[in-house]
Amino acid sequence: MDKGWGVVIVAAGRGTRMGTTESKQFLLLQDKPVFIHTLEVFAALKEISEMVLVTGAADVERCLDWVKEYRLESRVRVIPGGKERQHSVHEGLKALKTDWVLVHDGVRPFVDRKQITGCMEAAMSGGAAVLAVPVKDTIKQVNAEGIVTATPDRSSLWSIQTPQAFRLSSLLRAYESAANDGFLGTDDAMLAERQGLPVKVVEGSYTNIKLTTPEDLEYAAFLLGGEKKR
Ligand SMILES: Nc1ccn([C@@H]2O[C@H](COP(=O)(O)OP(=O)(O)OP(=O)(O)O)[C@@H](O)[C@H]2O)c(=O)n1
Ligand SMILES: C[C@](O)(CO)[C@H](O)COP(=O)(O)O
Image (cartoon, rainbow, N blue to C red; front, side, top):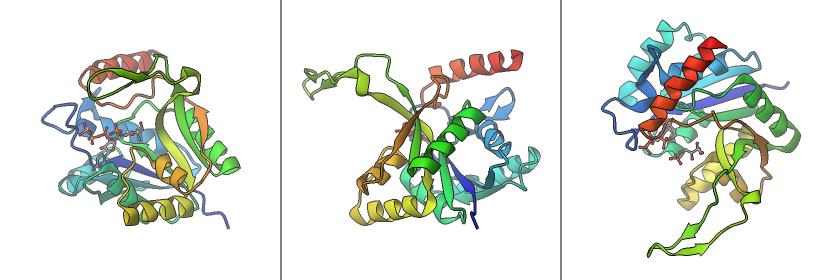
């Protein structure tokens, strides 16, 4: 029997680039913590049977309190993460029993249902899929002296987002292999790619931003205002 879809939502980072005292996943957008906005999008999807929130060991209790306050306790388990994003995702993967898994950043609250299901469908037909948008700027490779060394063809460049969707057993194998080899990637698909797994790109939206630096907060408030009016 197909054991369906689980999701790992990672929220164990320190938010160094945001520079706020409170970690960015706990900042309030319209009076609600960022990670709760994110959890609510996934909790509304009936295709998702298991949800794991990965947070800092010191934040597990207060996350559980928020999860209860927003009535998500029947949907979401909260577990402690690790030093790097990759370690946090690995902990989340080990906690799931589903056949398929989505991995998503807790600080990408503007993902929508259509983007998530698009990713799930692409993974089920091809093995793995990531949400992404074509890059808009010309990208240059620059050396340590500040000199341009290459201008890659923009038509083949995509900016990679989450969610990223995989068969759980394949992703777990990829994570174990990366851990054994001491390999650290900047997204989940990189680990699958190392195993030779084909990864499909699903075109998402430029508004699926990751809250990373302070100006992202102003844009997030703007996006949320716009969402309310729709
Ligand atoms: N050890 C870590 C590091 C990151 N993350 C999560 O991974 C997502 C994307 O990471 P990033 O934006 O880099 O978050 P931070 O590591 O918090 O930010 P920074 O690199 O600026 O410190 C975030 O939801 C973050 O909470 C995590 O769960 N565990
Ligand atoms: C996984 C990711 O969201 C893809 O864009 C991203 O790599 C997460 O963290 P980063 O530290 O900003 O690279």
